[in-house]
Amino acid sequence: MDPHYFNQKGANAEKVIHDLANKTFFTDWCYPNPKKADGNELCDLLVVFDDTALIWQIKDLKIDDAGRYKKAEVEKNLCQLGGARRTLFELKTPIILSNPRRGPEQFDPASIRHVHLVSVLMGDGEEPFPFVQEVKNHLLHVFTRDFADIMLSELDTVSDFCHYLRAKESIDKTKSIVVFGGEENLLGKYLEHGRSFSWMEDYNLIHIDDTIWPAISSKPQYIKKKQLDKVSYGWDSIIERAHEGSPMYELVARELARPDRFTRRMLSQSFLEVYSEFRQMTDKDMMRRHFSLGDTTYCFLITENEEEYPKERRGWMLEAMCLVARGLNPENYRVVGVATDRGNKNYHFAYFYIPEWTPEMEAEKVKLQTDAGIFVAPRVTRFSDDEYPPLEET
Image: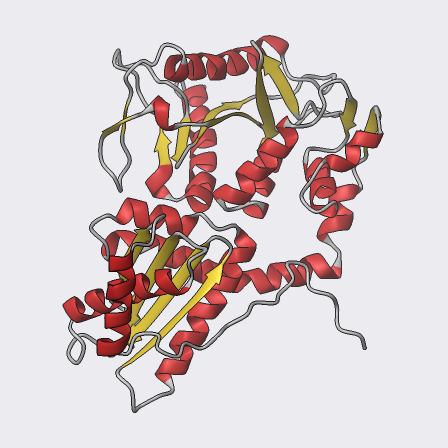
């Protein structure tokens, strides 16, 4: 046997999860194999997004003849997670993080409000499945390889992913819950009940069988949702380009990445509509649009290519649009701007957070409307969509 077999097997297991995590959380916020000052590894993967940290430990374990993992190996994996949490948030040991996009930076524990511990046990899973465990008063989420794949594909935004973890952590610990066939069946109940576990409140003993996920994932409404979600990945590609078009790219990218998958679907559809409408016109050198979605106002700008519309002008116009849009939507303190050209090659981004709207800002808004004609008579866009659209009657 190759003496490096087991090390290689572990590395392959980590790579699977790293690749999946990068698709969900993006390179910007994934830190594989962070090291402590002494050179020892802190964990297999650390994800830090805004005020949330996800600590991952990944092990390639096999079940025995009785269909169980070796208890000592599972406990070792869970203890490593607990140790990483203690290092970061109790000992506050200085940790330098680095990834290909952002370079080295020191982890700031004071900026984190939510911490989730995730253990991924590769290989075959146990049944019934212990979907959550507790170590030293901290909850740990235990995923099999199959469920990690489903979870990072189904809830593939940081918002959707963390909402599920927090919902799980809020389940009353006095209840007896047995999940057969893998945690995907628990996920199925979560989706079936409007992304919530509140339905468990009326029960003390809960058995979730292995038919739930196959039934949910084969429903026509679910299949249609997945088809409609395809356009949302256009927004993901815009997130990936944030570092190209803004000097404060991480802040902009974070705001672009904040929405869940359903919201990204609406954002991507809207951006594509504006872009397609502009492409069909020959008598204008730009098109502007703004709208509110949740607690954020979004501004889209499409212009001619740089030969006719220099990038400096496009950048100024986008920032001016964002300022005017903030004044037109006083309930939203955040404004996110995205601009591109007719060829969809050059991107600009802008982000404003203005909690207080001053008289000086109002005067500047009016001046921009008057002098540059920005959103003088804006088109009002209202969104009406369903995550799981009703099927058409035949």
